[in-house]
Image (cartoon, rainbow, N blue to C red; front, top):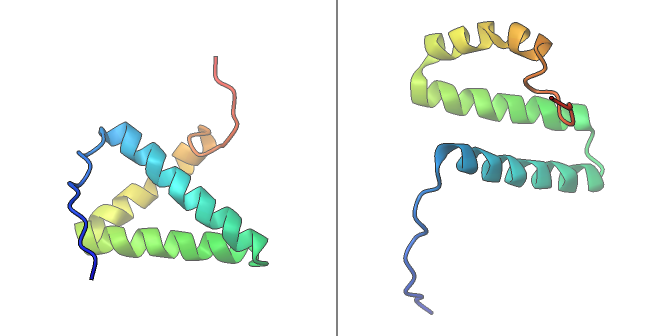
Length: 86
């Protein structure tokens, strides 16, 4: 077995880590669409994976409270990709 001696990369700042994580998710999403999966099925699976992981970490009530704020955040365009802000 080949053993590589490398040190893990230092942690990224929070905002940069979120951008890198999003890039990973979007690349996987594009690959799944390319492979013929329906984007709605991918979205449902992604939301389920995210919520179940958050619940495992923070518990049901804190995640439910965060989700209760989603409608307003959506209406404010927080999740709109390609939105131009000035």
